[in-house]
Length: 439
Image (cartoon, rainbow, N blue to C red):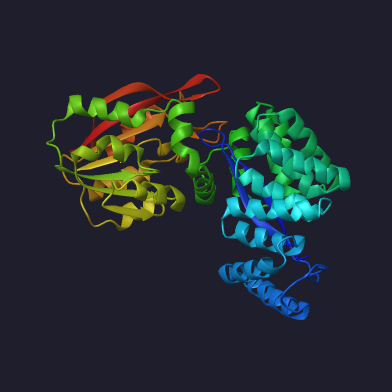
């Protein structure tokens, strides 16, 4: 059996809703076994074996469509082959066709019920489909056959994390570390759970262990800085990108329904009381546009709408909404620096929570904007003199700091108001919405 084994690697990060990020990668490729079948077939077995080897070669070369075609041809002759069903399930999984992958993994398991790699990869597939209860049962089955299977212990911990059984998840991550003390993902997940539950000393300890093994782990480095109260100017771009790439598929639902986020609509309501542009009259730049929530709120005012975001996956979702005339993937500071177009209105909703020192952005926008350009943005509040990196890993800014850098960059704050940014642990995060005009 071609026992390519996929591992579910979890990098948990504290984002706007304490995001859980999952990625999948191949951890091992073992040689394929020969097809074994004792029933009646129309093809000579030697021909099927040669055909199978061709399929495996395509599979190894990531030519998944060709591999699947060959596997299907073989299954027409021997439909109950656990080996070929497994390989086909694997190829379909790698192609993102999880429903059909699940069907062939189940067929393979029917004929090879104790095959650990079938159980393991079927569990990955069920998790992708959202069948967490079944995934848990499958990993538990693997562990009855192989109690010290580190990948299964770890992935089972991820499942329990996702369903809110954090106590059980912690036990499993600890078991992983007892078997593999430098398991970076387990260290990261334990650090995350401690951080989330405000066990800050333990979180700091685990982040430190993780960074000793992987010094370039951007999320751990940034979050450790947040716990230590370090003075930081900005969150690492890679950290922000990873958070929102992995957050993208459920961003709108989580932010709007779970966290009660409504800043774009609150901003638009106040905008209408302060300004009176005609519909379709503004060239709007949406900095950190994400999936397009601010674009939706302001779309009727747009003559053109341009969005910029660091996360390519968030940009892809914004593109599907057909709101934006232009979308750019990249850092907003780089976009502003190289921008030659002049906008009549600039939006930045919940963008500065990942940037501490925002004075360079204000200065660049000041140079690139014409008189009477409107700049609307939101921040989290702090009593600090300027800005502070909070224990959440996000930045908060004081009103005097905002007013000072706005004035220095040629912006006049014409209105500001306190607003609830989002909920976190059933408590509102206090923020401020600012409306400024270029003078």
